[in-house]
Length: 162
Image (cartoon, rainbow, N blue to C red; front, side, top):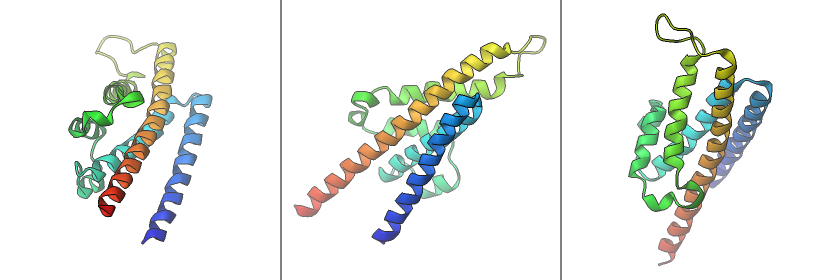
């Protein structure tokens, strides 16, 4: 069982490495919506891992592909002490990113009837900023999940020895 888990971790690591490289490539090539999408996938995966580990999400929710908004709202059930230091504003940043992402996905052509859409140069600036924030949040979500996993292992080890 342990070998299978270690093998799964190697595969996950390779997938993440590839995804982060693709985000960087998309950012440098100006494919900002692609970078946003890949980063959101990473963030969602890490949030699911944390929430599953804390029993705040059911395995069936993962299979049903629970939405990003719902994952973020479930973070309200995570102890505030886990959002210290560099993670203190993680929930708010995720929520702000989600709203920006939603806006940008539709903003390139959608507008109120009779009004022009956002000018392309302004759209690109906003998309670039959102994509850079998405990359930062994906890195942050990975480190937050890893830190929580280490704490859980340490606590399990202490309980096992008591």
